[in-house]
Every structure is written in C-alpha cells, then in structure tokens.
Image (cartoon, rainbow, N blue to C red; front, side, top):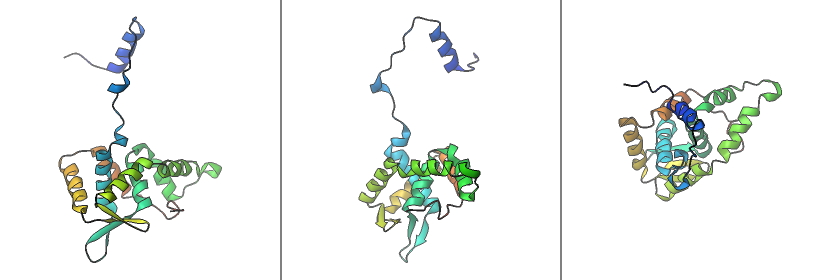
Length: 179
C-alpha cells in the first residue's frame, strides 16, 4: 500500500510544476455545514438536553435564549473554548483583557443563522418563547428524539465533546449582560 503522506501538499507541488489550470465550478462547491438547518437542529437538541432546566409542573424544560445562542456558537467553533473559559473566570490581561470577550460577544450576537433555526423550531411547536427563555413546546419530544439518535449513532462526536467540556464552564451574568 502506498504511503499517502500529505496528499494535498503533493497535489499542490504537482500542479505548480505543470501547465494545469485549476477550474472552480461554484455550483459544485458544498456549503458550510454551519448553515445546515438539520446540523444546527441536532446541535441545539444536544445542548437543550444537556443545559435546559426543569420548569413548571407539566414537565417542561427551559433555557435562556442568550445562553443557548452562546453555547451553540462555541459548540460550532471549538477553538473558542479556551477564550470562553478565560472570559468565564474573568481573567484579564490589562487593557487586552476584554478583547476575546468582545470578539466572542460580537460573533454570537450576529449569528443570525441560529436565530433563523430557533424561529423555525418555534414555528414547528418544538419550542415556545417565554420572555427571555425558550421552553419545550408541544412537539419537544422531536428534539429529544434527535438528541438520542445523534448520540446513539455517534454523530457529531466532536460537538458532543465540546458540549461535555462546556458543562464545566460557568456562563456568568456579565457574559449574558444586555440580554
């Protein structure tokens, strides 16, 4: 069996030493999974299962809209975990202390794809809005089924690891400030 080493680098060298001209066909490019409704729904299902708290006598569960949005933002971008931990601890480095938190806040606040998926889930009856919270709706069982299926079939294991790590991060009131 041949040693594949670094196939992309090998291909780049071969293309540099040839007269080949790469052709990009935009219609054949795959969009980022970050914009996929089903992918986002699965991540939201996993987060809701892990972080939503029991609410009310009917067995409903709820989570803060801002908390869910921040959690999914970091789950989709695992490289942000060290910055979110530092932000949670309130660790500062002089005048540079707020730079990561400002960037994370700006990023998750402008994540309209998340908002669109939440609006879709509300319209489907999976969630209901209650002031600054999302409450399990009449079809919340669908979300539970998605989370269970995702875990059973070992889908999105990287995201599941991030969620597990996020359980040890305290999302403080100052992190949710302005919501």
